[in-house]
Amino acid sequence: MDNCIFCKIARGEINSWKVYEDEHTFAFLDISPATEYHTLVIPKAHYVNVLDIPAEVFAKVMQTVKKVVNLYQEKLGLENLQIIHNAGQEGQQDVFHLHIHIVPRYKNDGQSVTLTRQPNWQDKFSDMMKKLN
Image (cartoon, rainbow, N blue to C red; front, side):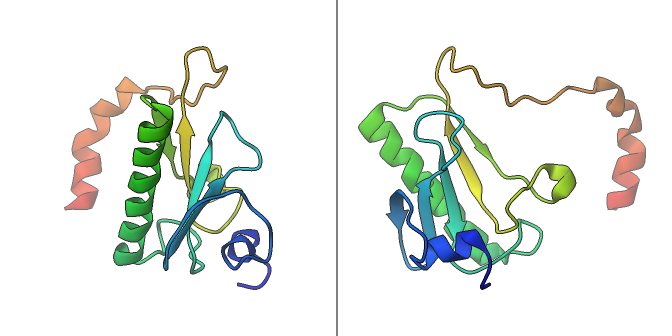
């Protein structure tokens, strides 16, 4: 896709801090990091998010996520992290090219990516499951 910033990064048209690259994927430091070594992993081909990417391409992206995590564990002693994917506008996606955030977490890093728990949804589980069957 011509105007996609992540496509341009993957093609080398925009400079980035490359962490890893292979035939199908590209990993680079996020230019608006939440923590040190906050990294984005993208497929080189343009897909909007997890809803439209083929399973085999998504698997390659996740293999790269694992390679980067292993690298950070080996080189940096990484022990805590979050892996995040936002899909769609209501899912807080802001760049519409699939990307996986690897966010290393550190004690007192000032970040809070948490979900508000809603235990009352358990009352609706039976109805929810009917829609899936």
